[in-house]
Image (tube, rainbow, N blue to C red; front, side):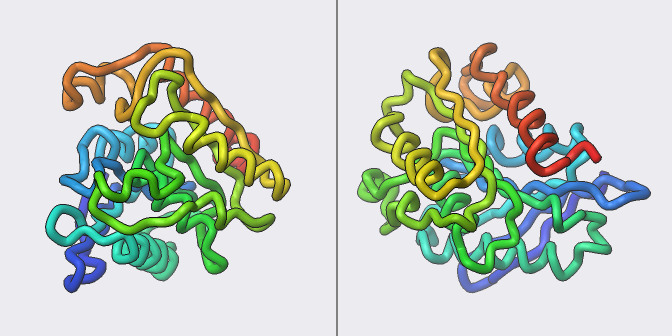
Length: 241
């Protein structure tokens, strides 16, 4: 695997980390948007998620959007758009199938992923959202000015896979996931949602592999989101073909 980092925009301190597998055919692609309330991006839902998708024959990418003293919601959205543009421009070199290129976001990164997937010029063919922030109820905590991304959903929104936990107190189901799912349904967008009875916010893959960098937090039941998501992708995007 070839791992490299390229600068996206030096003015807002953003970059793209590429995890490229050597292959004889173009592979599906996944762009990973980590969470962390615009503090340091967490390894648990950036690199480890990218590598997990690599084991499923994806070309994986992590957007390092501006955080800490450089944090800004609009700049973060711009970084994601620039990342997709870079991938599209270098698709042949990166050996990625643009018809099977999607986005996954966690928590605050889920809000950003949803925002990008709803742009009129989005290149995302599918969207995956893990315990996402949907409404701007956490703006004060995160120190940014965001938006209600459920209001952006249209009939052109890509197929979407969402999961969360009943125990999540940071992005409660009724306050966040429910409204987004309702918008998807009203616009006849293909979706699948899993609200797990165990687990919590911010546990990424929820397995031992991520728990070692996440305060020993794991949940075997909630970790099922990943194989369920892969199965869903095979059906709606044909990622196994």
